[in-house]
Image (cartoon, rainbow, N blue to C red; front, side, top):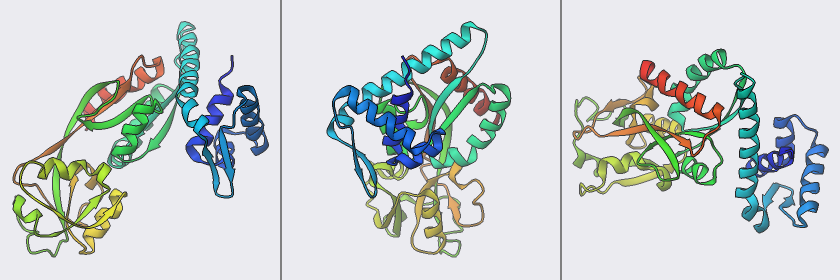
Length: 289
């Protein structure tokens, strides 16, 4: 049984576009539409709503999504296991990562990994903490970089403790401090990530009777840095996010020296390729992070 039509359906659903899915997967637009139509005919259900702005899942499509992911995952695992029996390592691994890892770690990891394992294809999904938790719960990723604690049925492998820093405009009166007093966090306008992903600032303020005054919310980590740089407020970010951004803002450890613990989440019963990539990441971070 081929899983191609299910894989195509999943990518259309993820991208919200038949055209973009066709371009990414190397099919014609009419070929993708034909596969989706054939799948809907086989199941006697409408799975997608077509509109001018793209496609969205129907209720039936939402309910069948986990089953389609399971079919694709099992088909990929079968192919990889057969390749391993033949003495080959090949397959596809879907990797979820947040911004700082995507910029500071993944380019170097992938550069070395593709030399060592040329038969394994890596598909990257970049998002915030909330996106990654959802992808893990839905089975949309095989391996994901997360911060602890992390819920979900997966194996969790700690990688690195990443210090949290208070960032301020360089001209701020407190920019010269060597340790930032927590009570000062509640006295300054604050730039925050969306509430669903503002884990880092919560690690600093929760349980400490500090009420921050959020002036702006953003989903983009680097937009947050730019807003602080331009004097719109202060924020709390992990040290890894500031790699390559040095000099744009003042960065001071909070007096409590809080950290976020970066870990690797690996799906239950991972494919040989997923386990291979996870093992490589663990070795790379031990040597380089």
